[in-house]
Image (cartoon, rainbow over all chains, first blue to last red; front, side):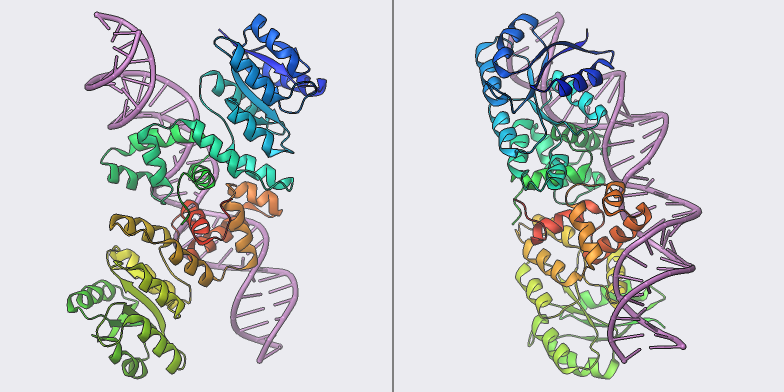
Length: 220
Length: 220
DNA sequence: GATCGGCTCCCCCGTGCGGGGGAGGCCCGT
DNA sequence: ACGGGCCTCCCCCGCACGGGGGAGCCGATC
């Protein structure tokens, strides 16, 4: 059965764009739209979507409050994917603290948007810490590390994965990590892949960046 | 003509080991040995080696003082490669501040030792920041970041290389960096290789680690 | 007993990465 | 006028990396 998505954004253009991108996927179905946060709760109750793609800046009730409201009042709440143009990092951070499962940039490529929806639908946390920082820089926004911390707080790495990430952050290769942990390199690759997925990192470098940005490893 | 090396270490065993490793290379020649720092200056004057492999902990005159003395009193001084078992990070840091061109762990593999000698002989700075951290951790030594800072201070990156490193530290791939700087990917690869060589990093992840450890990029 | 998450290991596969060279153009200092 | 540093781009090449599957084992949980 397909992943059902509710779109919440005050701009019709954005909703149309998201709908076009998501409906192009056979396994994703957009089941409804809302133009402001206040309309979200009844729609969630009615449609019971798997994922809510939620804008942060909206009239009446913003994405953060709407996220809190949904999580507080709905049984088996949907996954919340915060959508942002990212003029304001603060909002994203707050939304994550409010319980959102991931965030997504409007500027992201279609494939990334689709990927993000699938990921949160599967119960994985969050996306794009390093690339958020990168895009934030383009906008002159200095943000990132607080979001990165939120990412890691919510990433729910297993003990082994955390251990692997720590070694990655010391510059060790997969083979070296394998030797250190006395396991096979294939095992390490599995853990590394899990870490990359959970952190939304494209490669080990981005994962290590997130580790530093979040304070997961101490710079000093 | 071969690279000439003067070995300075109070332990004959270490000298013998270094000699064996280095003389196995056709392009490297060990031209002399000294057992303490005090003997270094006259030997340098007499032998005019390209590189001095200098232990830090020695009787009479330690490696730091010996390094200062050589650089202060000899015209066209040799490159100084500080050799350490690294129980003490402080010494290495001081030696680098004193003007040493690189540091090297006794536990390093022969190939790394040879590589280090060749590098400093060619005028490149320094080696193994990330792996130093790694080995330091094995010894329960928490050191690393001060040495990393010294590495970067002395790495003398060109403007372009520094720019590339900053982008690497934001998680960008070579292709993305190329797009950002409006140059070819081959150009970026050249810069990245130069950065890796100067920082003594094996891969971009280690380079980014060094960037964070040294404060070259701000964690926050 | 069955189910689930975590850890382990395996396959195939594409490609980005990094090493090793070289080369031309540019500016700058001698 | 020449060399040297820097930036630019090119070649070949091997390999580690990362994606996408699958599978067995164990302990906890239901």
